[in-house]
Length: 230
Image (tube, rainbow, N blue to C red):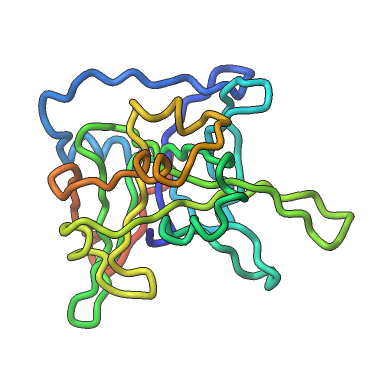
């Protein structure tokens, strides 16, 4: 991902319990206006920002809380905000039961053309809010006076053909975030230590026809960000 995505989450009053969305079978693709309305209500997120994360607590209750986007590195100015799914197998014992869901309305990538980077908003045709695969953990600073940092990293995979055309530059080009579909939510959030083969099945890729990509045009500017929520 291009270090930014948008979220739209509704919390129950006074609690952090996750309210599961209920989706009807889509009859038409979500059009640009529908997602423009969602984007106006959403909040842009960057590495080190707090992001809403859904996880299953030790009590077995699913909760929603804010984690820092990105695992802190020894160099305090940097974080690891994305994790390649191909690299997880190397550290499987650490991540086999630290799975979370990250709700988003859409994400953004830049397409490079003739030396210019053009922002594109990408969303899923079947889901007004999609739930992306993430891994979470806790960082304990060397300074004991500092609070531990609960962090989350997005899992990425090889991009589909449409995403390859858009995300065509940078060290992480030809990548896309992993989607967890509703049928896999329970299994994904469970505390089961299942094998790598099952893990990869839950993080299946998505096809070009499952997403819509729209260039973001801002008058008088070559690049732009999302509108802040009101």
